[in-house]
Length: 123
Image 1: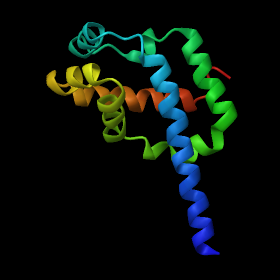
Image 2 (image 1 turned 90 degrees about the vertical axis):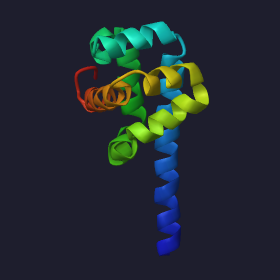
Image 3 (image 1 turned 180 degrees about the vertical axis):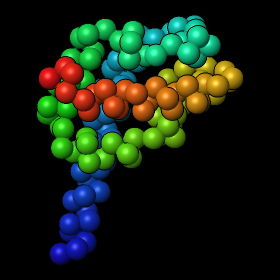
Image 4 (image 1 turned 180 degrees about the horizontal axis):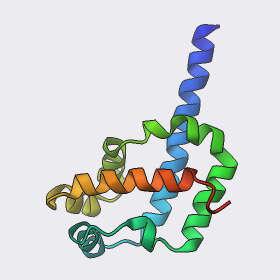
């Protein structure tokens, strides 16, 4: 029984991470390397310039998968997001890793975005 429960928990974690990956893939696809470089160099807070429709989509994601997302939010790390960038957006990945402070900027942004999506502001 323990193995079955462990399998279910692992499946839920994978599901939560893939839901978030799909959400990010959809909303990052319009960002250019130049825009990303400018955001890193100017330390732009991504959440502050995120359109309301994307913020609301994040809230909808929380409404649909909230318990799973909250439970596994800590699994969403900068290393995982960098891996996704490398696989899904190699040009943006290159900007992040080759710009001074890029990885630290991404880490700050990731933590801010997770906090905002998990908040009740857009519910």
